[in-house]
Amino acid sequence: MVLAKLPRPLQVVLLILSVRLASVFLVQTWYVPDEYWQTLEVAHKQTFGYGALTWEWQKGIRSYLYPSLIGALYSVLKYTGLDCPEAVVLLPRIFQAIISTIADYSFYKWTGGRKWALYLVLLSWFWFYTSGRTLVQTLETALVAIALSIYPFKGEKVGYYDQESPRWIWLAVVSVFIRPTSAPLWLVLGVYHLMTTNQGLLRLLMRTYIPILLLAGGALVALDSYHHGSLIITPWEFFKFNVLNDIASFYGKHPWHWYLSQGLPAILGINLLPVLWAVGKLVRRPAENKTGVLLLTAAALHVAVHSFVPHKEFRFVLPLLPIFLYLAQDVIVPWSRKAKKWQLYVMALAILVGNAAPAYYFGTVHQRATLQVMPLLREALPNNRSSVVFLMPCHSTPLYSHLHMNVSARYLNCDPPFNKPGEACEADAFFNNPQRWWRHEYAARQTPALVVLFDRLRGRVETLLQGYRPLHELPHTQFPEGEVGEKVLVYQKIQSQSKPPADEIV
Image 1 (cartoon, rainbow, N blue to C red):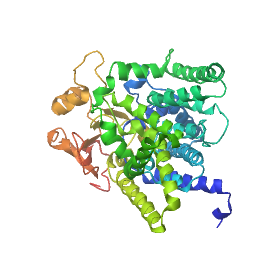
Image 2: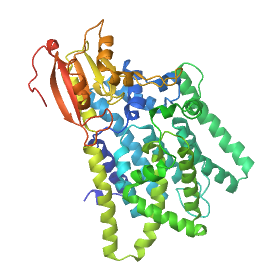
Image 3: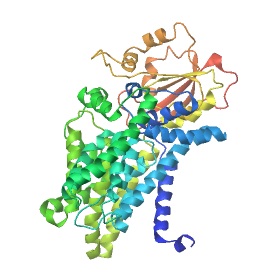
Image 4: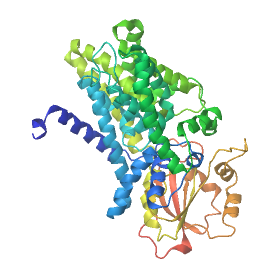
């Protein structure tokens, strides 16, 4: 009743916020290491003085902007004495959920306040799965959605403003600095803006584009240079290592068509059907929807450029989600005005069920154990002098950002062989011969208090774990692959126990 009395914009904002906050608490599964190792671990080390930095931070290919924002939140917790592990884990996700709420409301306003647009963005399974995660791509996607909502499209009333607001350029520059992979998208939109402006190309370039690039880019270069300790332009370093030197291929290669055959169909899910409908309509009658053609061109170049890079991931095309959802609602809305009531219900139900099923499975079931194990490790580590080793593919779990204990934590390294091409990383060497690695690692020091591993490794390390007792056995995935098993196991060193735990195995 109270909600109904509020202004409609506020009602929409509260609805979006409730869904985004719900995702923070409902999505309790592991997705990719970067969610923690490229943001939270960096911010934790900045604020609390202990943590782990991956090779990307040592080589200077990442921007400190997003970790610094999270570090500011950690600082508030630290200096107010509220830095309990639960708050350290949840606050950054809530912060990102608020940013995603702003992005979703911007998307809603961009479409002219259409209910179908709101329905699509709230139910999008992959956005529900990622909107509350501390991935750089999540922030990048939010910036893209907000920028598109104020982009000066020509010939149609879209976005917040009819005049040419330069604010989208600021957001575009920031998105490219935090994740240079969004550059193709902004290249198309930037060139189109310059070619269609009423201000004159040279005037707009000299008075708007270059000053914003210098101010925003200069500030971010200064921030990164301060943290890295020397002058550095992180987008260039990112391009040099991942594209020119092809370091990204060390983490896997995919065929050129992967984004078309797997990437986009996966992140769009059932929304792929109205997107294909929209694409077909644009191809047949491009003159009727110039905005749609521009957006499709930008998305096509983005996909084409990324298709030439051997290493591919689903999250790399996440920033295209606002564009594709815009195209989807742009065909559903006209159709819905002529459709029969039963057809509307079938459409709405299909979108709901088609998104709810993968959102539930991937958000609550698939790859849950590597997060679930972290609070259990906190309970099992008796003091800050304890130690834990993760005998798993590198970065399979978070670390200090979820432990929030200054313990000795050992994980398998998988840095690329920069100067020795073809050489196996530590993780590969371990899985080839676990006993040899263990003997070398603990020849001159005590073995760890806790050992964490996937069940696939258990048979190969039974002799190494003779002095340990099983403590936890957690279901992880129904689709084990490589060295990732169905369960996560935790073993505790017998002689290190001060008292037996209440439960032998959980």
